[in-house]
Image 1 (cartoon, one colour):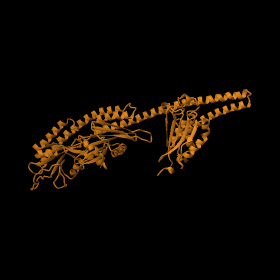
Image 2: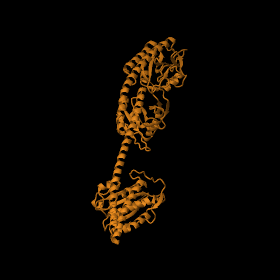
Image 3: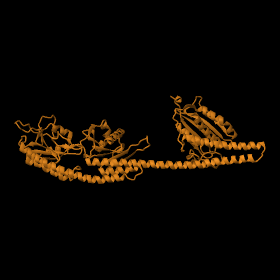
Image 4: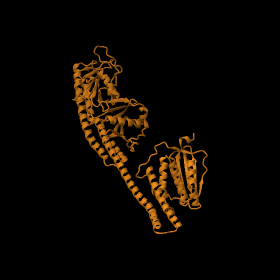
Length: 622
């Protein structure tokens, strides 16, 4: 037996006790039950009657059921005698097929005599039960004293074996636990940490399967993780079980408990206890049968678990152990493991599991801090690159027009040109000043939008206004018609629905989206080309489509097209003035209005930009 060190030697010793009771005390049947870690009483030795041995050996009964009979029993010294008929349905798992005695003091087939097997400290370790006295009479005092002597011997054997087994198990568990704990040190990735820790924890506990889960938190941007190991093929746990495990883990962490789910008599029962051996001694039958340690703090049938946990039953899983993973006051997750051999976890094993879970919680916190640190470093590096690009781009974009302005101002100051030349010089100065003003405006807009730069976004937290995109497109096309004509580019508006197409948002920003896209299309379309603007309505979205027959965009450029300060690698496009901010502004506005933007383009074949925006509530199709 896994619960007893040198189990074969102990069973042989207990067999000698039961056989001695049969031979020397004068009973035809003697049986010993020992108390398992799950507070079941299991029959491990039967002597004297083959039918009783076949019926009883290996059977288990919850101690709570036996305790009902012990409490109703009479005290015969340290023995407990339950006379026939005192408790309806009471028996010890086997009733002999013998006629009832008729004389005074006769032993009745349903009489039960038990001797608690206790350690020197009085801890209940098992029960010795006897039946069928050879003389057919209830035993006298001398017989009871002899039976008590055999019970003391059995109690000493069980106590010594328990201490030896506990010592051996503790030594092994300490080494395995330290190994499992050490496994969690040094991992920077949460999933790698769980994969390694799950394997070591399963090895330390001798588990046939183990599921380990770290809960995620969307509020603080923490990702969850799951690891599954073991030789037992188990299907994925239903969501009802996952939710129950999460709730149990959080409550168990708050109380410092482990949780056991045991399959017994077609029902899954949940028990919780601190399982540290430091709990109060709980008397059995008012102390007449001794006391037990680590009695369950709570026992209840898992509501709805018969169906939810049934996915484990084909694999023969009879008991599931859940240990919460946490740090401080926060439950971070849990691991669940199970057994199919009918054995339960000893207190030392559960305490080791809780130790592993506590240390794993610290490793999870460290791994998450490492992830946050890497993210912070990446953001700082990105910010540094952004500032470098900002300084370089702004310096370049301002240096050129400033140099031009200064040069023409010197010409105006030093020379005496004719009136028409002064007019040309002033136009050049004004054009370059407008260029600098445009750059400044776009930088300020980017800061307000928070489009990847160092400024914080001015969130679109107000409800917004109803904006008719039909009016927006018409207004933009009207304002850019002269520019298109000067560039010899045909500017068309595709047929739009007659009714308004309404979205919710800021009118000036949505107008800026259409204006930037159409202006870009005109700028990068050679003379004789065409730019078309259209609106397409779906049930819940409106598409603004701007297409042109211009230069087109390469695949490599498309991957960086919406980045701040990006300029095309096409020499023909680079020859045209621009800040590289227009499309960044478009994407930032579209995203903060809950939309998306896509581009389809091939070099030399033009481009099509599609902005998709959710329609306003008043404009949805029912």
